[in-house]
Image 1: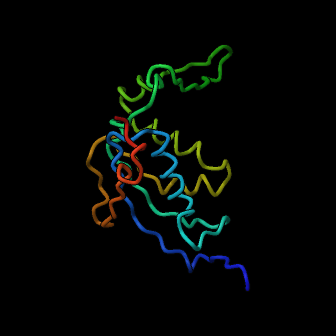
Image 2: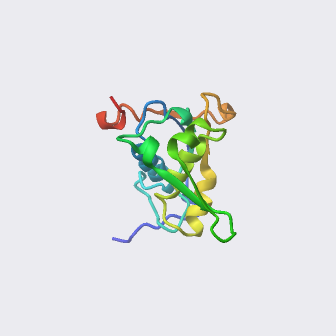
Length: 153
């Protein structure tokens, strides 16, 4: 037996749309990261971009367990001395770009290399229920029905 290693000609990419309304953030990010890498496919090859194109809608309605909405902080540095700043997850979700919470969670679940940065370009996150990718006829992946723990009761 020989080990199968996929080539770019063997790769078949699909489009998937996921509704994030009421879904727990970490569980959503884990499923999206798995789909972006292509680990759900039997022909997974670690050095190829095997993953699907993922569209996440309703990112502003994602849920968090415990007190993460008020306690989880996102830090950045301005580049100046003493220039560290932070915002809570709740502030970002209520702000102008709530999709950044989902994007950051997915990005941090991927390995930090060149291939992961390329795979992140296959992720599209939208705060509302509308997306401009109807022409690709994406399949709907119901994350809520995969596991009862995926939603917050």
